[in-house]
Image (cartoon, rainbow, N blue to C red; front, side, top):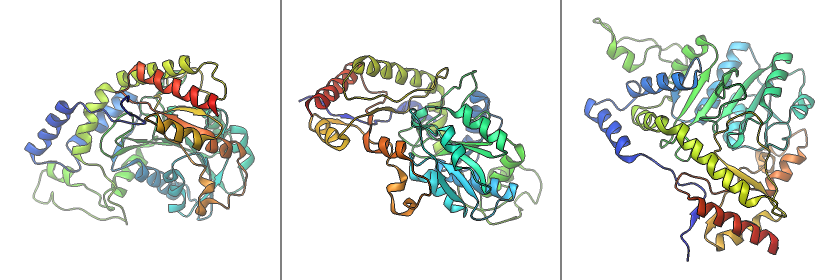
Amino acid sequence: MDDPIHLFVPTFRVDEVLEAVRECLEKGWTGLGYKTVEFEEKWRAHTRLPHAHFLSSASAGLHLALKLLKEERGWEDGDEVVTTPLTFVSTNHAILYEGLRPVFADVDESLCLDPASVEECLSPRTRAVMFVGLGGNPGRYAEVRALCARRGLALVLDAAHMAGTWMDGGSHAGADADVSVFSYQAVKNLPTADSGMICFAEKRLDDEVRKWTWLGINKDTYTRTLSAGTYKWMYDVEHLGFKYHGNSIMAAMGLVALKYMEDDNAQRRSLCAVYDEALAGAAGVGGVAMAPGCTPSRHLYQVLVEGRDQVMTALNARGIYPGVHYRDNTVYRMYKDAPFPCPRARRASERVISLPLHLRLSQGEVRRVAAALREVVAGR
C-alpha cells in the first residue's frame, strides 16, 4: 500500500534551528529579547511593514489588536465588528474578548469577505472590519479596504495564513491595514512551534502593545538588562496587561524559517499548479477563486465537492488525509444567533476540503491525491 499522505507535515531546517536554539541556551537568554528583537527587525526588513512585535500566538495578537483599537478610538461595549463566519474561531473569539459584537458578512468565490455583504451589514455601531486572508488568498481585500476608508472604519487583517503573500502592486499583506496579525504556528508557512506577530500601522500603538504583552510593565527585562545605571532594575506597572510576548527559542526558529519563506512559498505554488492541472475539468470538483495580480502564500489548496464528509471518508480509505478549513462559525452554539444569513459561507462550509499541501509532498503524490479525488467524486 502507498504511504499515507497527510494534510500538513511541517518542515524544519533541523541543523540550523538547533544551532540557533543552542546560541540562545549558551547565552542563557531564552525569553523575551535577544532573538525576539532580531526577528522583529528582520520581519520588518523583509515585509517592509513599519512595525512588528513578536507574540506567543496570533490569537493573542488578534485580541490585542481589538483591545488597543477599542481604547484608542473610544469604542464601547456592544459596538460591532463585521467579520467572516468562515474562519478559525480565534478570529471571532477575539472580538468577544473585548465586549464587542461580531456581525457576520458572507463570503464570495474566494471564500473571503464579499464587500457587498460587508456593506449590507454596516450599522451606526460598526467600528471595524476583520478581514481574513483564508489560505493566503487576499480575495477582494482592496475593495474592503476602500470601503473602510470611505466609512471611517478600522481594518484588522487576520493574516494568519499570509506570511509571504504579496499583494497586487508588490506590497506585503498588511501594508495598508490599521493592524495585521500573522501566525507562525507549526503548520503555517513560516513555522515555529507556536508564535505570531502583530504589526500596527502607528508607532504609538506599537509602543503601547509592548506594555500590554508584558503585564502592563513599561520596561521589559531585556531592555533593563541593556540599560546603564544603578536603578536599571526599576520599572513601573502602568495598567493591567497580559503575558502574551514571544520568546527567543520561538524567534530563533522563526529567523531560520524566514530565510527560506519565499522559496518555500514558491514550492507551494508549484504544487498548487500541479493540482490545478490534474483537476482541470474534473466533474463535481469546484475550485476557489484566487485574487488576480497577487502572489499568494498558498497555505491551503481548497476544493468544493458535494457529499464532502463521504468524500473525506473515501479518501481516508485510500491513505489520503485532507482537512476542512473551516466550519461556518454560526453552526457553533455560541455564534448561532447571527443576525444576517450567510448562505454562501454555509454552503462552502458544507463542501470545502483542504487537500494535502506541504513541502514534503512530491508532484507525484499531488497527482495521486488529485486522481483519487476525481475517482471518488465520479463514483458517488
